Image (cartoon, rainbow, N blue to C red; front, side):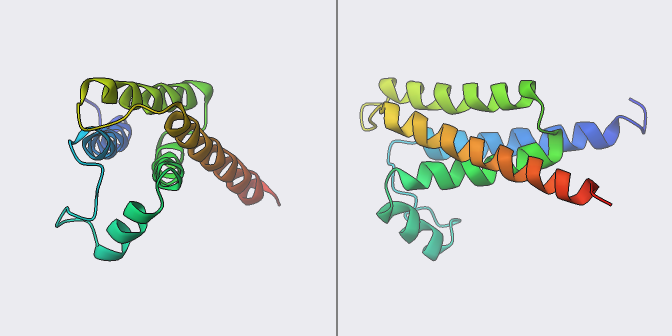
Length: 128
């Protein structure tokens, strides 16, 4: 591996770790994140009391980081949309969780908003 490719590999490792954390939160038996000791209390309380909006917020934050690290290309956006869909569909096989098309829509909305924000930021930063 060349030194030139190591920053890209590092960014990819960060993205995979973030995806793993998001998958863990989405696929655990309980949807309550306030019970996790490593989640700050105010974040857990907010997430547990805001239902579907937490999907939008989580995928917005995830999307911001991924788009900033890997770019806003259609491959990255498509992979994120697929990831959001797959982890919701996977809840069909977790007895204590519920599959909901609105959760997919909320996740996709968060990703779309993150994509737009990163594109706008890039455009603003590129202006003279």
